Image (cartoon, rainbow, N blue to C red; front, top):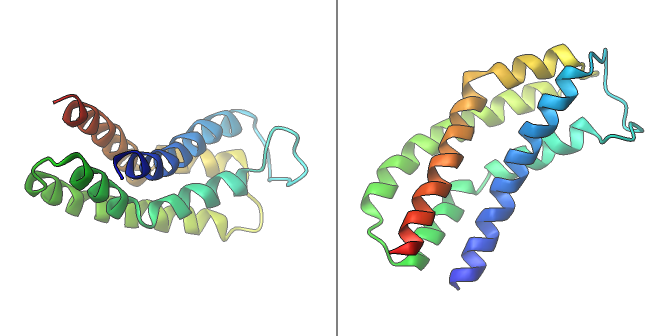
Length: 136
């Protein structure tokens, strides 16, 4: 069960981190709009995967915490914050995905969004804390 919970969480965090990295490169291209035939990748696919990963992220973290057998109380308090950050980041992703064209400027502003940055920081802190918990 421990490995399954780790894999489920890694899949979600990878989708979020990969989308952010792709968005950084995409924003630097100076594109006016997206094009699904882009050989470098489809920005919408990255955004959709990240948005999907947000739904259930907190449950995946909590499952991992419980599988590790650590005290869940401090995690639950922090996961309340992550829940709010994930909802805000999802709202921003949904807004961008609703646009008929996704250009570099739009993605650059999404990258700069405090909502997305808060979520990324949450994910990095969670990964570090889980690594520490797993080593105990």
